[in-house]
Length: 273
Image (spheres, rainbow, N blue to C red):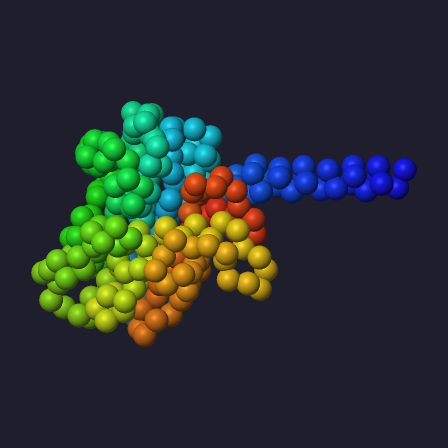
């Protein structure tokens, strides 16, 4: 009898744990809130709210994407920055994904910016995906920069192509930026950009790619993070020299559709003087 009880308890534990890592936590989308003070923030941008999305790995315009839209609507940000992996390497229904991209850009016209990730490159429809993003109103930064203007003030937004695939060119992306004192925000897919970025006087660097490791044993570095630094920058906020680096855990999942102690996130960043 005792063996039977232990067997059913073990079975229950396995079933409950499987439900948690496969179904509950991957869908337990959280909003991570940050407040960062920057002395060189122009007065017109004081209190600026940024939403960072990363690693959606969308396969279509489904429940996950609708949840993201609902959360963003509640936040009502000034800008939305997307740090790569809009889609999954196996995504085929690009038209359905485009509905989501349009929904974002229509409400926040000319305030949605993004960079490409490795899954865009791994998808056989890369060129179509990139064009559909642009046609949907997403401003894709491909080793280039733009001025974000408000009243008489401006800041620089810089975007590099995927560092994980070695398509990044930060030197080219910063071409034309002469004033070192102007606030600069860099979008990149992977924290692998940090070695170049930390010597470029960039104030805030937003990245993703790591998914936070997806499985994180408490008090231990994530088991597997697909970066050259082996998870040194797996998730969260880091101060490196005079730069802030934020690594987003992502909205979606990778090859293994599980999460443990590493829920998906949308990041809300408020910048003040």
